[in-house]
Image (tube, rainbow, N blue to C red; front, side, top):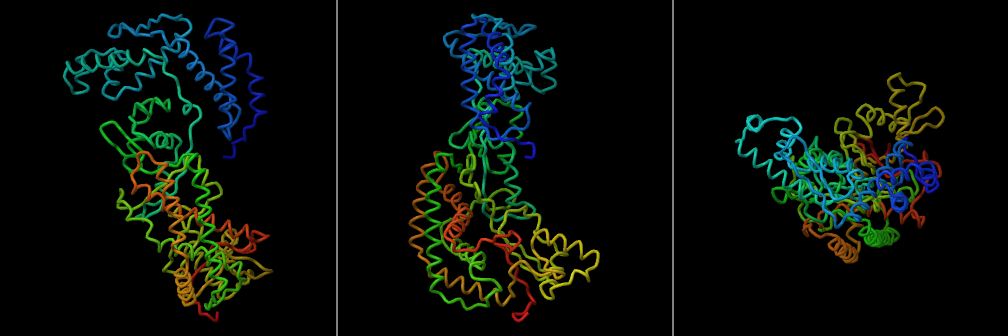
Length: 536
């Protein structure tokens, strides 16, 4: 990320000017006609300007230059396809010592491209056919040798070679154009919801779809059933390099094998267009629920022990708790599907992640029975890591009970204090360390939850369900091959986004405090400590 540079039109203009002669030379070399070369060059420049807007960042000059020539080659293949749409490029002589390409257009123009296409088409063959072709033509092995190595009959080797030649002929009859996805890949973001058995987690699941290749496999298979060959052609990646990733996605149940060689994405992915329709509905729902809660809180007399913060600061705690409790209480989601590793989860994907911009956090809960500490924190993190370790927790409890003087700390405690200060769990005022987080005793926390339950029961459930139904209907429209149950499961993950939109509404209407100094207090986090009395 540190090497990423924002891309701007001025930068593209400079790149074009610096390489204009080379682009024209590229066109002349492939057309050998100045008039056609100018047309091709104009096509290349147009495609460059059309596609650069889809790229937000690049990593260094070499990467940008490589992108330019990828676009140039892609445009040439399109131009060549249009020019020769009525021509037939064919291969004959497969079965002799060399692969001889013959075409009814100037071989000098397309010689290199044809050889590249042929290599690419061989890479697209399934493993059984590919191995025979490579063994016979590249390694010059006899039929008997290939049969022995592959443990098949010689007649099977000959048949596979014959079939491979037939498929190659068919594919080489037309020039294969690279798709836009080969040089301008899409990006996929996902959110998950469910029960994960350690060490497997939602974090691990997200990591399985982190690579750009896997993201584009899932995006391409999102609304149609495709073969590995289809994916290979769409992404411009040889089949041999796709097979392992596809197998891994199937094993994690995010990609579904429909038939012998057909696949589809096994969760709902919202396109950029679908997200534009969903965002207003999410915000409407979040705003309606937020207004409902605020209206109740204004009339409701909170009787539990108040923390040492003003009410707007305290809203950071009680509001998310009410929301979370209310959402969980709604029978919106059916039982989640059983997944690999004994887990139950659902997932929702977003092309380019438009909805997720600014939404970085999820609600998680971790328990520390050894130190009597229950942590509730509103942030996204690796579930294998905790925001506060056991040693840090024990020291933190000491700080909460006594407001520790920094001058009496041991060397080990100084290191722990330094880490907690960096995490903003504690703060330093003069020589004294104190908590920077709201703390409840166990008794206070029990009272708090009773109040939350009462408030939740006063909320307008019908309003929520009506708006939720509108959103579900929009999600159904976005899905072409995903079933109704899968859509409903994916919709449950939107609760995390609803939390964020509701908090955003409170901020915009100054119903929740926004600290001027980021160190002023820790929002969205609190601790419940057993053994801390209400008077302490």
